[in-house]
Each structure stands twice: as C-alpha cells, then as structure tokens.
Figure 1 (cartoon, rainbow, N blue to C red):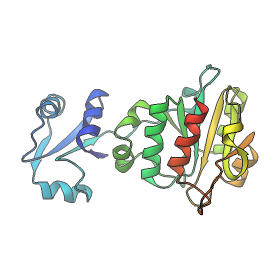
Figure 2 (figure 1 turned 180 degrees about the vertical axis):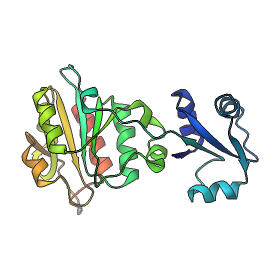
Figure 3 (figure 1 turned 135 degrees about the vertical axis):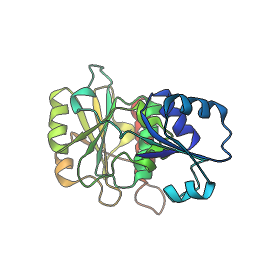
Length: 230
C-alpha cells in the first residue's frame, strides 16, 4: 500500500510500520525523514516530482511516497473494554475515503476505544484514508466484521448501549451518555440501514435549523462524539 506526505511518513516511522520501498524526489530535503528511511529501508528510489505525482495522481505527496504493509485490522473482541464510559464508533457502510479518514482523526483525538467497519460495501483503510487521517489510523483500533448486526449483538452482550443516528430521533444533547456506548453512523446517502436501526437502543438526531436536512457523516460524527465525552 502506498502512503504519502511528510506527516504520514513520520507516523510510519514512529509506529515502526514495515517499509517495503521508498520513493523520494530528487530535491527532497527533510534530513530527519531521509535518515530514518535510509535506516529502515534498503530499497529506495529517487524520482522526479512529476514521476511521484503520476504515481498517486496527486501533488500532495510532498516529495515522498512509501510502499508499506497493509493496515492490520483488529478483531472486535480486541476493542471492547471494561470502562464504564467506553465509546466505540460503528460505521454502517461509509464509502467515501475522505469521510473515513476524517472520522478516524476525530476518534483518535477524542480517545475513542475503537471503530467497527463492515467487510463489504464500504471503504477500506487505503492511501487516501491514511492521508486524510494524517497517519492517526495507526493510533486507533479498527475492527472489520462480516455482519454489523451480529457485531452489535456481541457489543450489547458486553454491556454496550447502541445509539444510532437519523433525522428523526431524540435530540443528541438530551441523552445521558454515562454508560458503555456505541455510536452508529450511517452511509453518506442512505443513512443507517433498517436492520441496524432496529437493533439500536436509541436514535439520536442533530436538529437542523437551516435549509439542509443532514450533515456530512464526518461532521456529524465529530459533533456527537464530543457531546458523548463532554
């Protein structure tokens, strides 16, 4: 998997992620990153800026691209905790990598215990997700599951309350979050699925006062998460 940008590559080094190959621009001048990469990788190739941009179809690489091992997902058993205020975020088929990356970054900053994503019909942790998360993906436990409803039932058995999100529900500010809880965020276009919604204990909503009837998935996630941990 190709990752790029100085901040992301710095996180690769800090987390000791295996670097299979490094691509660096001819005029790359960050001595710290250069020294670390030469210490950790023997397969290094110097390229022109244009060649680097063509590799990932983007000029956001800042002169450095690393080919690293794929992200290693957790099992759902690995992300549950005994904390009374534990918080897990469940993503019901998020498809936009920028949304997933932004949600991961918010979850890391808020100290969320884990994220659950489905195996099918959803974006995986890829280069765009990692770039958008600014490398925080390696500081967050992400579990990939075959069936979200089964995952929800497992979490319920372990003491978690499941709080879905929809346009019709309880004002998110009026809920007592002093419990082990999971926040379910739905697909960008369809919201949470009917079957997932049926298995939620509560449905929270953010009241809209303008002409739009919904928020971007990552924005809504940030608003509710910070209410939950307040």
